[in-house]
Length: 230
Image (cartoon, rainbow, N blue to C red; front, top):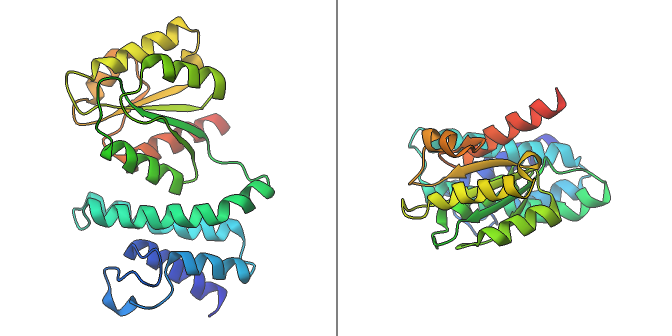
């Protein structure tokens, strides 16, 4: 298998959501062939650059995002691909750290106090890790004080807040006000998401962005990153 073949197959297996060779994927013809994990390890054995490997993973997820947006893929399909990429990134992580390759940015995410829903939050976390961000998942029903303490101690670039319920979404505003009171608001960009919120609500509470899903979150974060370097 040539280097070009490995990179092409890596991208295709991300699209197929095949983490290992045991996974069937969408195209049954691939059953029994190397999946994302095996191909990532093979790429490293062949001394393919980390950049090329990550670009292949990212390109695959970009296609998955397009298929999800067009309703060709559904949440289980998208999650399978995202988890495959996440597994590959775990393999690459020690090498990235040894090579001093910086992540795109540090992202903290939490479901706000009073809300225990985590499916949307978990999906966003998986997608952002696959896109090259360092993600710290603070969990569900997270008290505002814990979020503020984390921002003080760890200084993430971004904070994602999730809420499913109209009764808990007001906690997002509470967190933003607490950031202001602590003198931390200018240190972190705040993104909100969840079924209960909207772009209008984000503007109303002073959040930096509203994201309808994880793919939009990636686009928003990448635009923030680009603005930093331009």
